[in-house]
Amino acid sequence: MKRESFIQASATIRVREKKLLNKSYLNRIIDAASLEETLRFLLDSDYQTYINSLKRPEDYEVALSERNEDFLKELYSISPDSIPIDLVTLKYLYHNLKVVVKEYVQEEDYSDMYLKVRNLNIDGLKEDIKDEKRLKSDENIYEEVRSAIDIYNKTKDPQEIDIYLDNMYYKHLKELAKESEVELFIRYVEDLIDFTNIKTFIRCRNQKRAGEFLNHVLIDGGNIDTKDLVLNLGKEFDENSSFLKSSRVYKYLKLGIEDYRKSGSLSIFEKLMDDYFVELIKDVKQIIFGPEVVFAYALFNEIQTRNLRIILISKLNGLSSEFIRERLRETYV
Image (cartoon, rainbow, N blue to C red; front, side, top):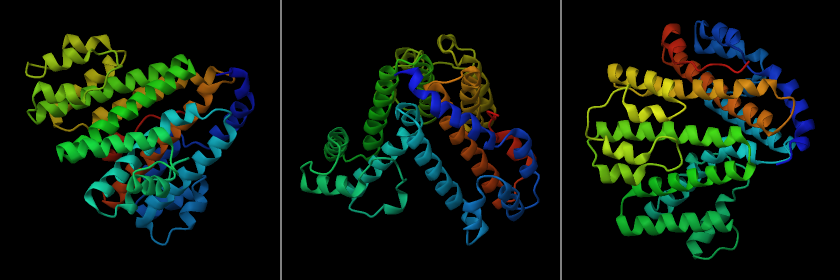
């Protein structure tokens, strides 16, 4: 990946970054008295067009989705390589593949669950799966979906669809990072795997799952050895457990596990995960040009959307400003 090829894209992004919502702005809209007032505050942001198109304030998710779709479409058009963006958006593709498989095996219509994602011909893929021959879809995607269907046919367990496609998602992520040869991207994927595996480990403990199942669902490629997780599944476990300390994200894991032990909820754990990645990309501000600039912009847009979703759903449900601030992610700007 040639750094010089990102000069123009980086310059464009540095200008557009100024439209990202900073902490001061978010604090102002958090203190709005209602959902309607919160949306009015957002009219002086680049969400204006999407909010003005809403029929009801309660439909705010439409505005978030449409703005995110346009944001990504524009970002793909200015980036000389898709990898920095694909690292952030690949989960949308695999979400859609899960929906395709479940529609097929359960003979149901889940069309309202699809997310708009770049370069996925959903109708063509569905036709290929039905006809059992690849004509209109990407070969790798077709093979993954066929494998997921075969696994379901053998097990009759819908969870196995998710497990298989999640493994394919992380495999694809690792391949993208390796292909890029960008240290930040490799670190991002490794650290994401560590966070994901610890969440899986906690849930399996809570559900009293066997080590065999945990081993089946863990992802290889992080800094925490999956064998250590399986060995410690039935043992006493807290935030100071030694096997966690091999990870770069240990400080955040420790705080997240500590909160989980008190609350029984992973919501703060997930907030801390996002906060870690915001800290990870903040140093990108010092890079004049390169693929990291595109990646950081895409990743923070994802976290900004998450922050707005937290604020808006909380306002819809009449939750306090204190509740919202406790769950709000760090900002990049």
